[in-house]
Amino acid sequence: MSIQARHICYFFDYGALSMYSLGSAIAYSTYVFPEEWINSTFHHCYVPIAVLNTVISTGLSCYSRFPEIQQPRLSKTLRTLAFAYPYLFDSTPLFYRLYLCTGESCMESVIPVHYRHCVFAFLTCFIFAAHLPERLAPGRFDYIGHSHQLFHVCGIIGTHFQMEAIFIDMNARRDWLLASSPLLSFSQTVGSIGISIIISLTIIGAFSLALYSTPKSSRTEKLHRH
Image (cartoon, rainbow, N blue to C red):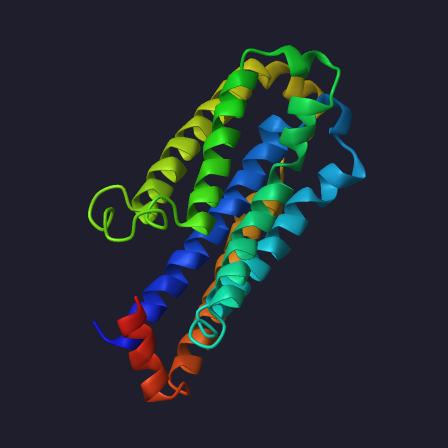
């Protein structure tokens, strides 16, 4: 695989992760929002802001591959921020429901499942940023137990608990949500996803073209670095 193709594959990977954050926002807006926030201004603006976050996340994460050689810490910081910020925004209604609300939704049986998701989401971010355990014993975890492996395992488990919690909320709160919360429109669901895909593909295309203006020596150094 060429250096350019390798980076482009990463660009698509980042774009897919950004779309995952938008999907989470749409699901949270529909099923997870706390009772006190239903039909609030924040509720109405939540999905449009998530679309904007998707664009920012894709652009920032793709850009983060360019300063890796000269400024590796900046590159890592930008990439972590690109995915941590959308997650924190998406989870704002969930965090309120878990820690601050006083309504019946705080006492539901789904709450422990949401907590499990949050724990594994934190572990995913922490392991990605800290590069543990290989930082403590270089060379010992090159094949088994490397942080990149643990990062993906925690991400998958966290996503499992997230989907399970959303499914439980969808069924347990169905009648109340149908009576109290307006259904998301076509433009808020399919429209938002379609717009985000188009913009993300445009961003990926722009950064892919920019690869060819990067000096060849720099691209070769990046390949050996990874």
